[in-house]
Length: 121
Image 1: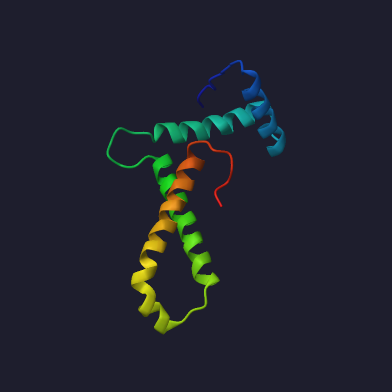
Image 2: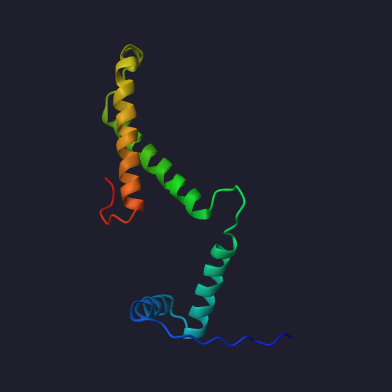
């Protein structure tokens, strides 16, 4: 059986508050909370590689962008009355509106991901 590796560190105030909040929420001991958080952090960080594949963050940002875009488009579609003839008749005119909606969503997602606290609507 391998010997455990003892690890000791001090935590700045905010990190300490966050750690205690996590520990209490999960009902864990200090040691188990530290193990779980360290395991998660290392799994994420060690998957960071220098190859051409997108990072986990890039993938999550793209997923978020697609979900927000799909949600907005779905809201527009459901907010309108479906009329098959009108759909084909007005398709050319509606393209700029659809493109603008997508651009607006992209801007809101970028603002949110850059740290803006207000949830995009």
